[in-house]
Image (tube, rainbow, N blue to C red; front, side, top):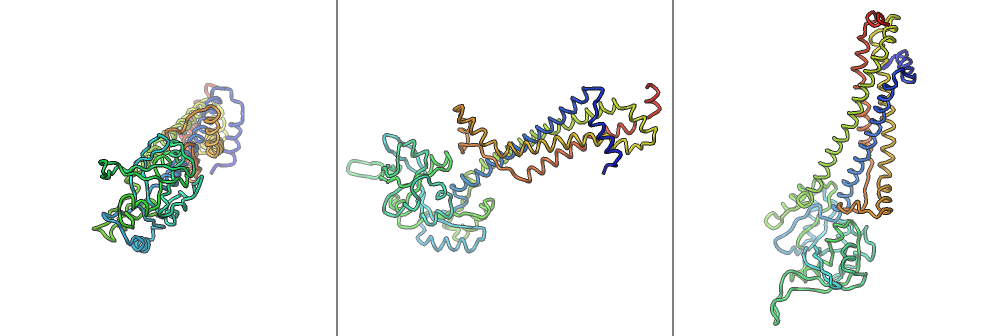
Length: 412
């Protein structure tokens, strides 16, 4: 792209001591600005990618990706589940469920809870709970035992340990000789999971048949939960499953329950990326200003080169070389720094959080700062930074090429 002579002179100008130190200072500031802009953009986008990943794997790993629910109990739910899998290749696994709401009480503490009646063998295929059990196992949820699996946050708030009894109070009232009293049942804590504070404090699991007994329903399931190969096909998959029995099945999916959270993260990622990209743009404008001042400072040198036969194209390339060098060094340094920060930002902030007793992550659905470095982000940011740096050199270089030797040397 550049002639050897243009590279030689341009690199000499870059390394040489300049009579005007202010120009060197502006060039240094341009390089540092570019470095910081690229590094911060890579780091922040990696953190946003981390939140995106955690939302998909943790929250959407527990919350149903898609479901079909029935107006009546589905007695032959196994046949329906097999048919859903056969008719839609996007469905990776299915599981039956019965859902109810109530309150847990133990040791004088009371907390609201969303209870799901599950079949352990099927549930392990559609959720991540089995991978995040800290004590006990989901396999302990056997019909007739009235066992329960709770999240770590709920266990701590109720002051429970494995094997303790906890009472589930249902909002439905039962008539008795003493009057109308709430329906309640004692369960044994047989498992504890830890996924995220939001999930741990809201969800509980009991055997599906025990849930049916509590609701005084016949054996069966209220609905079928679907796990998908691609979570973004959830609305279509739910509609397809409901179409098997459109008069009895009703679809639902994660975009209706948690779509706002996912959309907020995507919007925040786009806006933060755009704002931080302005840092790189400002650094590119600094390259323009530093090269314009350099052209003014080197007018005599340009005039002499032209009197020796240098073409306007050669002069243009000489000054473009300097801008490209500044952009290249700033971009590469920023990329290296950004990768280092992206890979270690979670550990750094975690150490600060623990060392100073801060609560930096209390407002989020996870208790640490996730980060996921993606090659495509690094390539796009690095490429955009280098292109902007190159474009910033065009105007000053063309201005240098238009200098007239006779007019310049007349006053030298």
